[in-house]
Length: 363
Image (cartoon, rainbow, N blue to C red; front, side, top):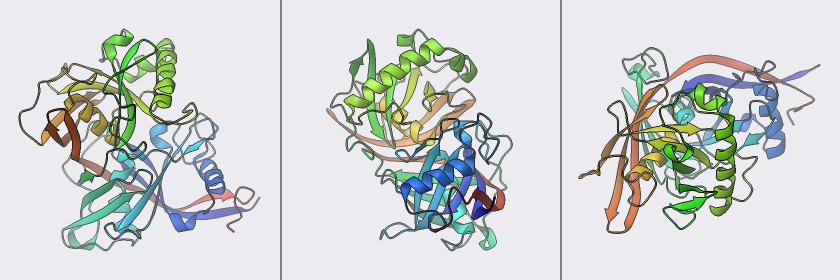
């Protein structure tokens, strides 16, 4: 059986990893593209044994890059979430962890030229319209991956990649509060539905009979909770104007609780059919907005800040994720101005991946 090759970089971005490819090396047609990504990642098997996926939603993600036609941006970042076992590809969300690798990958691919010891890469997230500035370490004109920054969920240390997010409100739904309310009662559970970097549904852990301190494994074993959560998520998705979300990974879901280890609050984030081992970069921004906005389910879980921007330490199953939010608070008005994080990335491999020509002939 003949196979078709596609050049790729294999990179870890934050606490996720996957192939980074040029958009021009892949089918333009969305249905054909999905078939290629399913074959490349090995979706349809719990171990992704016939592809380069890793058997978990954080390792079946794809970044597709191109020179941007936007006057502001250097590079367009098109994201795909490939299902581990179901053969589905969702282009609705973006991924902030995979985004961490976009700046380094764009330089490695020659889409952006390095500029001094630090290179700013202006990124447009195609899926949501968000604009992000990534600052990448490039001493001597090459991406540096070794450094002293540690992030929970990744062993060792690496060079920092600084991210500054703008235009993160309403990318999927057109509104900060897609239901028009800061709280809604859905299937007997109080939730807050926000669209900040990622459309999300959030509830207090206690309303599900949980503490918010459970491990990812404990939550994954609690199928009664997942069944209840999924019913709430689907109903909330309809209220958010997103239609039938039963086969979509958005809106994502999170449960919130008071911090127990010196952080701002505790969060458990769902992808949505499995617990995230740590916390999504995009999700951290939405959770942070929920914690800071009066009247949401996150209101009261942490002390009200007195100055902006606000550094938040969000406790997750593997440690803490730090995010800084700048929000506008004026009476009943609430808006998210920007969000900043420091993460790390590493180039793992470079070469060609192969898909059967029966999947894509290359035409």
